[in-house]
Length: 301
Length: 231
Image (cartoon, rainbow over all chains, first blue to last red; front, top):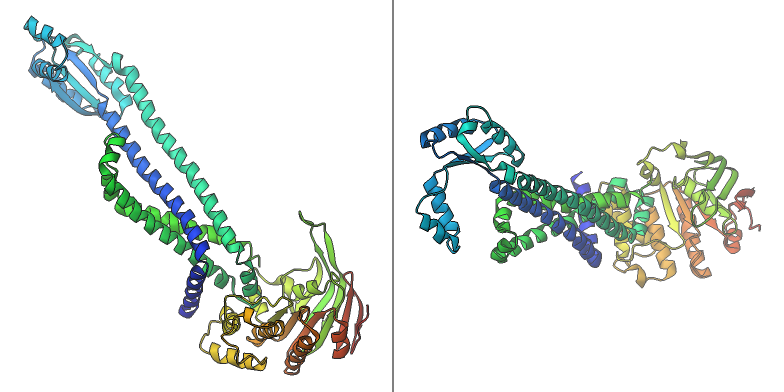
């Protein structure tokens, strides 16, 4: 058995070297498929980052009447935090709200007007983030209960509701688009790889015929082609792995600026084993599957 | 050894050709150790007979037996066992151009056997037998047509087949080299192998004085011991 496998490996290695150009062409096509697969994985990472960033920006602010004390609001905060849907609740005092306003409107001329009236017009509030953007309505309903309604001056979900819904829609739209793109491009990659390998194997059909007629087992004939396909895929995966690493490392800052703060290099490093696995699976898998189907045509018996 | 019983063979139509009937009600029996010549014009069905023996094709109806085995009943993936009993010689040699003579012959043994230890010794023996012991490291392109055909014979003999199927082995050769090849085939037959030779060469058929099966339009029109060319 070992000798049998040795013969298959020897034959495939010899064929691989002999068909230098076809090996190169096949490896390049698989390389493109691997690059595509890896890019889509990183794209999905970017989409998740973007979705999380959008989610983090979605919150509901509940403003309390002036007469409601800080202690009362903190008690309410504890109650709100117990809600399953709530991820984070922050108390913003009128003073903090004033400071935040000053910070964000440093250059605005109407800041002078605010200073001129010499009172703090801001109300105490709770800023609430839900686990999912669509859950903000639960928070609104909570504050409409009899116990809390008299204390509340305003809930800004009515103003933000439409925006929140749109952002949620956008986030899931990006995710779905990414998935559809992944499936579509994967299909193209499989088709192109299969056809390239089919051409490569077609050029060796006489050799296959000779092997069949001298009494070679189908596994002996198929073996070298499968290994050739797998090796082309392996080379493609390793080259793609190294090139992606170098690319993300070299253009780290530019890419971060380009993709709204998404650090592709850090993502690549964090998921390095998954990335390598994906690349090997795509490369070796495509090589094996395409070779299997391409050579099957000639092994009808 | 080889038996055809009422064999019909139709090739189905495809985009390039219409349906073609290659053999009609063909029946014959070849004894072990016999030398049989299949004779007929191009398209008479000679190659189809050889393909049916080697289970490359299956009959549309009727049965083909090789050593009492019905070739149509061979399970998928097991045809190689039958082919290991056969040796093929082709008109166009079908040598692998990038392998040396030694490698071409050894390759057949490697492909059909798991035991690689005796390969070298056996290849040398068989190449000596066909008179090419001094050209082991030559590539096929460095050989003449006759020499290439002798390599093809050596490859066919390497796993000691019980039957040799030779499809127009002299078709590309001049009379001198043709006689040479036929002499080797006779030698192989004398050593005990059954030989089925397909040819349309009148000179060869008449010189051999062996059994001749003549095919015309897929039918056997003559089957004679020590037959002569009849067309």
